[in-house]
Length: 280
Length: 291
Image (tube, rainbow over all chains, first blue to last red; front, side, top):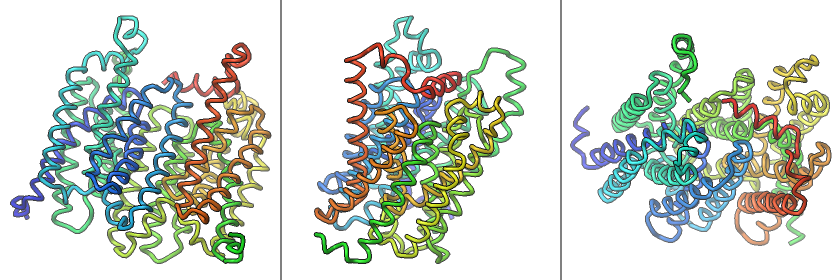
């Protein structure tokens, strides 16, 4: 059962999966507290056109993904603040890029398999170079997030006060979305374009309902993300079902009971400390 | 070009496209008004699990989509007004449903190429019986919408006042979600799971930006939906690119143009457009901001 760990492709999958899980958990926490989960979901969909276009041009899908998600991140960052308008505008831009993706797919003749792997992930087929690229970009993103940690947290929880104190809120917002774009592009390899939510938002959404302080929530999210990814790869390598299904099922299976039971302790906590209400 | 219309599949495509464009335009107006765009998007993803599950069981994918989107819609409708963090919950359910879809796909191995059909639409493979199902569901949806039109409009624009006046806001929300589920399942046939936004939200959002009177907006949204669908079909017959690409491109470009027009108007007569143009716009923003 544990023999599978000797195979190079399983080792690659575990390595890349771990990097992605850590960076996705950190970025996911901030997405959650900034109310941008739909933007994260949309970014990955926008990346699909980039990946399909890259396949069409014969270059690595990761580069297409990075190009599209980073430009989309900047555009979303520049959009106005009103959430309802923004959801619709993001959705419309997402539709446009998905339409482009459909076009690229139809232009690329041998498409079905490649498209499938972009949409639902190919962690078990990941190469040594992919692992290096993933490690490089993940470390870069984690380092930038740690560097921006305090101002980002401040501007996420209280944008007005942060702005008054001279924090460049708007610039931070755009920078953050660029980091999310990189995270999304890395995560696509593990769970695919369509299931980003399970790694990006799932662990963080569960963590903020269990613990309250930002740092502990992020740490818990990282642990959860790694456990989902490892278990997912492990189960998929031993069985016949796809990795992304296991990760999605684990992520949802842990979130659901926590979400249903959390009013029990969150309500009590709020009574104990009125006015303190920091979970997203 | 014109003789194409004699082919059965072309007729089916035009018929189904027309019905879907009308129904999505009407429902879409309320989706925009009620700020439920993400819910519509999620329902379509849930439909993906339905379609693949139905393929696994060997039944019509339309039926599978109806089944799962209806269950999901009832769940979402019952969640009701507790807005806080609902995007996250919808997203979690959405991705779990997609995960299930992936599982069904991997169990049903022959399906890989048809996946692209479900995801990006396969209007050219719609059968006559699909058209009949779409037609009957479409008529039923429009009839129910006609019946609940006024109270639903009231409840969408000002839920608190509507509630106080005795309008059953919660029940209306559930009925509307059910209609939305049926509509999404139909729209998936035309534009696919991923591009439902193009027919459901884009025409209505464009119309709502250009006019603020509900009936005019709905009529404009129907016209836009029909234009997008028909031009998409005609262009794809002429140019060999996929129908859903044309529809998505037309729909999103027209919305972006309408945003531009709105900006120009507000530049020209700032006082008139500085106040929130639609009563619901300010209201929905205000309720969202509390969270």
